[in-house]
Amino acid sequence: MIKTKTLPNRNKSLLAVLGIITAGLAMLQILVFVFFSSQAVTLTQINQEKEKITRENHQLEKEITQLTSLPALEERAKELGFIPPVNQGSWSSIIYLAKQLPIAAAN
Image (cartoon, rainbow, N blue to C red):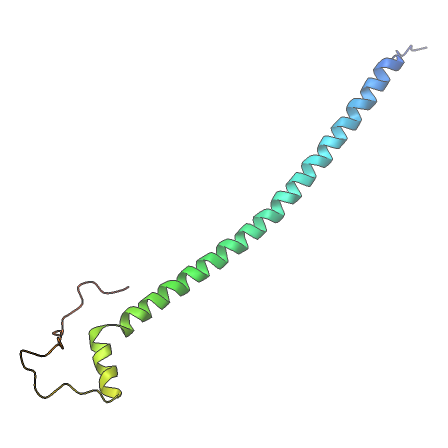
């Protein structure tokens, strides 16, 4: 006959408490993992939206630069019927800028 040692009640209760604590910590770890996973998805969506808006902003800046260049403004003025004055005396308060190539072009 083999004799087996039985744990005292104090060790059994300690083992039960440690088992409950371990199970609780495992559940807590799962909950934290789920929480941060959902936050990562939200963060990814926000970053994608930010990149989309940044590209759109860059495109709009490029269009504004093109539309406000001197050659574009001159062409638009001609389309609207503007004509340069016939007499340009020294008393004239109108200053015409010469056409120049842009120093830096927008990408």
